[in-house]
Image 1 (tube, one colour):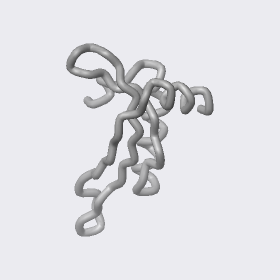
Image 2 (image 1 turned 180 degrees about the vertical axis):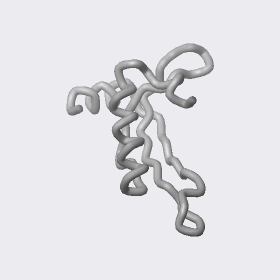
Image 3 (image 1 turned 120 degrees about the horizontal axis):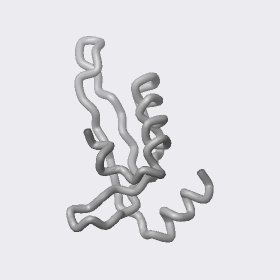
Length: 79
């Protein structure tokens, strides 16, 4: 699961956005920490949406961009 790469403190926030995407088709803006190959954390801003085929969810398109540590911490304070 991709959740194994999400910081424990951001897990519930990401899970809520995942549920929102499954209900509405779009996650909305999500900011969370993601584990890198080097074992460090990077702040990521993401938005995901479901793509349907034949009336059924077929795949997910996610757009992500890295944030500075300051930007990530600011989003965390606002959460």
